[in-house]
Image (cartoon, rainbow, N blue to C red; front, side, top):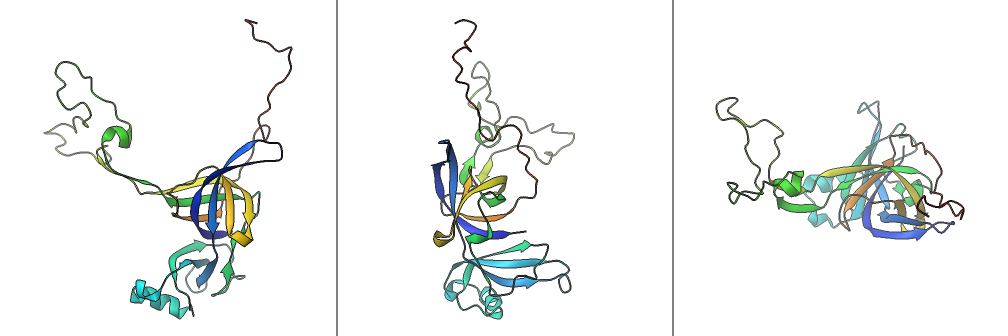
Length: 232
């Protein structure tokens, strides 16, 4: 099990050796410091707590600063995240993890906080249908409609769609492959999109699912001139 904390830089595209365009997301991964180590003998499970991004002590609460001082930290970290590992024997408090923990070809799950969209109605938030704008509809064509019967059950069932705050939720995208790793720039490049805005904090760890590719790695385009359409 491998893991690291990073920051989303943005999206771009690169070309592989065959000239195919690969949409990628650039992540500034680490360096992270091991702030705390948990073992099965003491806490009942194996885990390490990583710290990311420097911050001054005055911007932390006393418990937050005291927790890091206990670990012997001289440079305080803004983001703390615990990752459960199978074996923590190779990690000690104070160890530094860089982007080198991952390599090109690895599969990762990326967790982040999705972009916020403010207060939205049921059409944008849940994909509800509009009412017809003909006779009798009135000025409620984008409203949620009836909640349910008044007498029985005399309440709204849990899970009923409605207007409200959209976005700012924890989202995990699974099975993204690492395209490139640059330890000097603390950069990990993954294929595809990840949740969150530019500058948002993301967590990378090994994919929990085993990926099996079906078919060719890249789509093949037929160039046989004899294959023509029926209308030709």
